Image: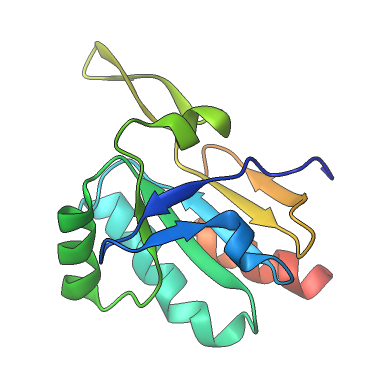
Length: 148
């Protein structure tokens, strides 16, 4: 830990550009998920939505390869209330090391490894969770904040 989180600027669900630098001075949980409105991703996003009142000034930002329109529909359907960023060319996922070869039903393909990164107020990584279970993302965040 302690290394600088890769910078990014991506469109959110409403088409506004959101960058990591915009969160300077506060913590932000940056989490990557494979596809909006799928069962695991919904569990993960709704879990984070449900703890937003318990994380103080910590921001939450989700990133997937979905286009902004799909992110907007996901946000609206579940009233998530935090930025969902569109990384359609997966360049940010690559910078974070979470664009990896995956396999499903014996078929190999490139995709997102569900992961979460707690970035400190100074832009440095404080906690990293690779291959995180959808339901564990919110509890991992709460534990990390309680411990700091």
